Image (cartoon, rainbow over all chains, first blue to last red; front, top):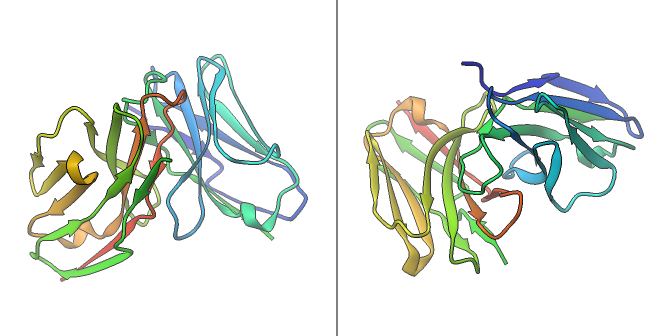
Length: 114
Length: 116
């Protein structure tokens, strides 16, 4: 069975630009979460979506937004990119929105902002 | 406040040594879940184990074992007879039942280097 997939793998942008990252969850999983991992640190929670509704939001500015589609795939959008947005962006899926479920992570998208 | 602390930033051992990775957590919830993930150089986080707050039984899976102690708010991870393939960054994480969305709160990670 396919795991969580993310695209693109790598991305280079300049300050002020906009970026869209994509995630496809494991088949049958209805919950998708996004995390930002800055080099040398643990992942930080950005958003969680379940059944196309936002169920949780981390401490990130409004420049960050996301959505989930009817097929449960998801997009993370970041506007007005800053140098500090350079990070590995991880998508995770799980069967439901419950906090007891382990989350299965994709390989991530490495974003570099110049 | 919820927090996960992994005090060991880096650990280096020689193959076949045993190694313990420490994890201390803070939460006000009575129902919570603890996780360990492995992150190899490829970057993908690999799930290792989940523990709920009502189950303090220690668990062993092959060379891996976990010690959960609520009295000290610790959830330590031991690798017995370490191997080079165990080299990775290991993260401890906390999820609280009261929080909608079930976000994972990660520690800073411990980078384990196993040398031949």
